[in-house]
Length: 97
Image: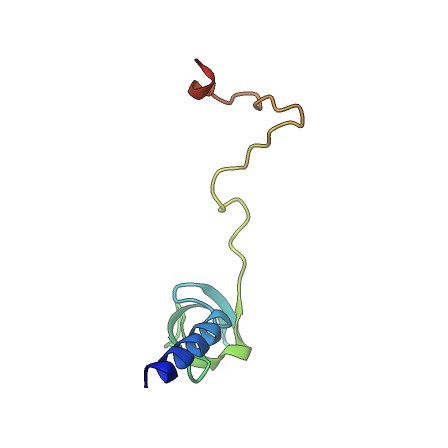
């Protein structure tokens, strides 16, 4: 029995990777909403809308929307090829001996 459960768990995890996660903004044939519930075995998602009741869609009918640009957190800082820290970077205390 345990070997079967391990196999089923692996399949469940793989199937879940193909579905949008709860809370993600998605576009559907009915408009834009947020994923509330995910039925992994049936590959369906319940989407909640602002102006209408929630509806269930097959995973193939929904598409995850990219987050708005600029909302991905602080901008990345790059270290120049010569290894010097970028301007405005605080000094590294580990360099002191």
